[in-house]
Image (cartoon, rainbow, N blue to C red; front, top):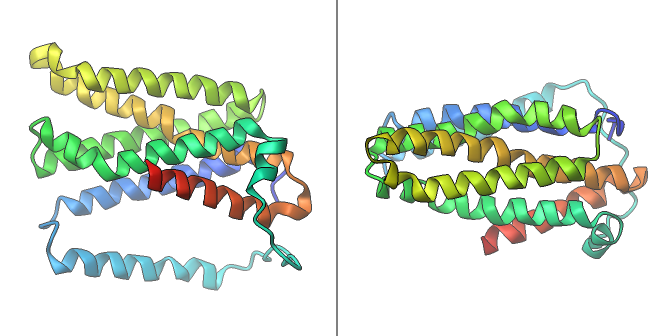
Length: 223
């Protein structure tokens, strides 16, 4: 709500970077115990509850509450079709990735620790690229940056598909492609979010945020 268009890309991608770094630590925890152990779910509960602490103690004023929030998804497509498409594409690919990436890594012969490292490589790539791409999008058309990111993600997916043909170097190619996939695909959602907020009116922040969540969440389910 308080960010201007001049810094909005960096704001969204900084948030996404911190989120990605936390996901890396989460995958490190995954390697510390059996996935079905009750203790793992207990740790998730404790960490989720801990998320409430910074919200409870912040001195930052909250945005003014809108009188009424309407979810008019079609409006987003009307004034920012590229942002709408970016949010949908990010949800589709993200839904498929988070549902199947561990299975994919396991099918390539990686053990539990290897799967955790594979996931961390993707997320680390995303964390590295988020802020630079957000900063770049603050100085040029965000749609061009999203297009370049989508092209890079496509190349990464192709490399992951053909990695076994590299023989003894297959594992290195797999991890390099995984990092490239994260670096290229993860920022797309943040850039689409920033682009949609650029085009929306100042009083429509809550409606825009709600519609973006609906678009990306629905797309993730389909993915």
